[in-house]
Image (tube, rainbow, N blue to C red; front, side, top):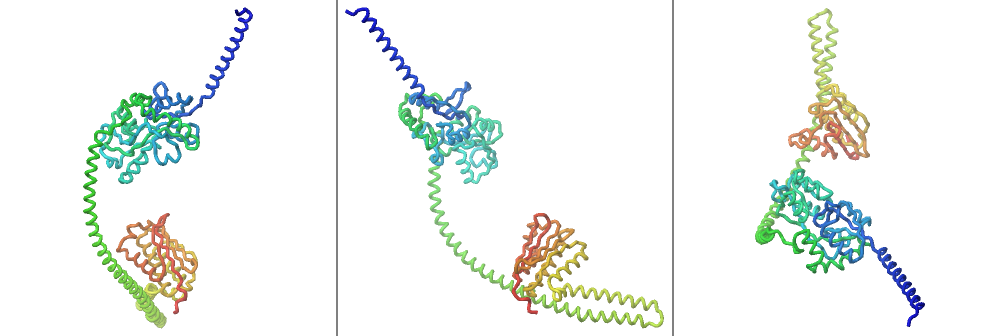
Amino acid sequence: MVTGKEAGRRERVARWVCAALCVVVWTLCASSVQARQVVRVGLFEDQPQIFVDENGRPQGLFIDVIEHIAQQEDWQIRYVYGTWAELMARLRQRTIDILPAMYYSEDRDSEFVFSAESLLIDWGQIYVSRHSDLRTVLDLEGKRLGVVKGNVFTEPFLSMLRQFEVTCDVVRYDEHGNLFRDVERGDVDAIVVGRYAGFLKGRKRKLKAIPFIFHPTNIHYAALRGGGEPYIAAIDRYLGDMKANPDSVYHASLRKWFGYADEWRLPAWVVPSAIAAAGVLVLLFVLNVVLKRQVSLKTRELSDANRELERSNRQLRASRDEIRRLIVYQQARLEEDRRHVAREIHDELGQDLTVIKIRLAFLEKALDEPRVDLEEKVGFLQAMTDRAIDSVRSIARNLRPGHLDDLGLEAALLWHARDFAERTGIAVDMQGHADDAGLTREQKTGVYRIFQESLTNVARHARAGGVRVRLGRAGDDVHLSVLDDGAGIDAAALARTDAYGLMGMRERALAIGGTIDIRAHEHGGTLVDLHVPAAGTKDGE
């Protein structure tokens, strides 16, 4: 029989045991709550896969699945909202742990770890407004095309356009929302999106899809390599079983958001299109065999024709070289003849006219009686003689400037520049110094004739008010540049086959071993730039 004291003692022990058990249970519960892991999950707008509803709650297939896994793993999910580009940056910066609904690509696989199981498969499609007359990808030529920055379908489609040589104006958006709005109201002509986004939002805005699909891609959960692997491993522990169980949260969410189970169906037009494509491939194969044979025959014919053409080209080049040597020879002979004629005119005819002028002066002084009529006749003869002497000198200078032989190249160029300025009224600013040591007679003559032709072109065509001439030595080369301030020569004039003056300047520069550049100057006018290397001896005159 238990006494009252013993009963009291037992009651106190029972109370202490209960209190101790309560403390233990409370401690376990508190430690369990404190041990819940916070997992940061990216949240963006890509309905119905992932989005925020009008009440601000995360929704979609990827949300339903990750929240179920979080319950099993005792995760505390903290959603981080942003655009796709912002969330990709956050994932790289490790300010979020998991990014749902990431489309797989080989480039991304090197940076991110993907769940072993995909939740969906998507492909790219082109959507246009219901009133659009665009029917094929080729119709995008010259149109405005809307794409999403960083979207997995954007770059493959733009690469495809480049292969088709289709050029269009690409407008890039941060998210899908404005993309669908702008194509509906005509700000862009077409948009590139995945089939899920296009099906849901395109149907709502009464858009239509061009019958063309490309770049099928699996959609996964993803995390950053080098730290995100445990999160993906936890997801993989559940996702395979969820997809295999038709009563799982995964299948329930598919039915809720997409209206069907996970078996996706190809559009009705894909199968007949595939059959037609196979027929086209067979036809192309047959045509390819036939064309290969024809190409082989034509190749042999072209090879024979090319050999004949090469032989003709060699003959033509040889003929051109012979003609060029002949031209050089003729120019040398012509300059020698001019030199001889100029000397004869200057020495013989010029002297005779000078004697006549002197004799007329003596005759005028010898008249004993003033004879007005005779004085006028003598004066007239003297004036005519002066003009004849000036003409003789001018002809002699044009045939062969005496300064070139007597004083050298620099003096001859300076004399011609002054004479040009006096005759035309076009100012010539000539600066620089270059002795003609090492230049042959032919080279000095060539430089002078090119300078002469350059100023002639200025007077005839440039409509210039002034010319800047620079003469100098660059190493062993004589450098001459002539720049006018006129209208400037255009490409068409440089390419004309009947521009004999320019052609003659180029041929003359080539004949004396020099190089010449004739072009419109960037600040206006025409520039003639000549370089002539010294031949090594003076000229052997």
